Image (cartoon, rainbow over all chains, first blue to last red):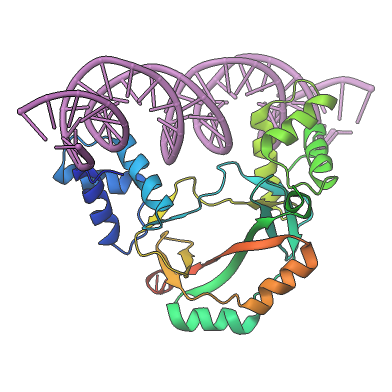
Amino acid sequence: MRNTKQRQLVLDIVRNTDTHPTADWVYEQARKVMPNISLGTVYRLLGRLQEEGLVVQLEAGSRKSRFDGQPGPHQHIVCERCGRIADVPDVVDQAATERVQQVTGYRVSAHRVEWFGLCPECQDT
Amino acid sequence: MRNTKQRQLVLDIVRNTDTHPTADWVYEQARKVMPNISLGTVYRLLGRLQEEGLVVQLEAGSRKSRFDGQPGPHQHIVCERCGRIADVPDVVDQAATERVQQVTGYRVSAHRVEWFGLCPECQDT
DNA sequence: GTGAAAATAGGAACGAATACTATTCTCATT
DNA sequence: AATGAGAATAGTATTCGTTCCTATTTTCAC
């Protein structure tokens, strides 16, 4: 990977904020310094930086929503190879919730846990 | 809310599967029974059913990815009013991970916890 | 400096989801 | 059972985040 001005700039922007920015926010910031950087470049760089572990992409899953007709307090695990989703019991208890409220100052109303791994069938292949 | 044929059908489909389907999968299934049901109707009904608590929508968050330039093992909490994201320590430990592997048969490689609530500022207003 | 490979800018394309609107359907009331 | 008001739908257009494409520019090993 080559060390371009654009790459430096994007990495700089994303490292010097704690606002967990969106791609287009990064793009806006970048344009203040380099007015004709392209949005595609920002996306490509963010993806590349993520592969290198310098950046973490949140909500990176597929963009399609999925629906569960059996509501109730359970969580999910997604197979990283075939995409199969299974139900998982909730491992987050009241004590954990209170700890999070203490640390963040947020008033917690819900949580969601997603697990990732290989489903039994994909482990065999 | 009126009890339309389309509503019955969509609820039926989503309740009689455990595959956590996408909206367009539900749409395909629905068309087998009612060939000119519209995709917009499926989306609207799924949204409505979710509001009523009959269906849970996974990955419902905003469609925009967000990026974190300080990678490392931490999780996030999102303010439900203003969207502000803050970091949260990980409450999932090794024992929980092993429990999930036992129950599901998946080999777990990662997990993500998202918390939702009100940030300190939004609690005051 | 030179050249080949990699990266970029700009714009087109894609796809999931939503918005719009004329028409149809539901259901409380009679 | 008939009526009518308003809620829901079908079909289509549109939005918007993201990815793809390609001619041009830039980087860097030599």
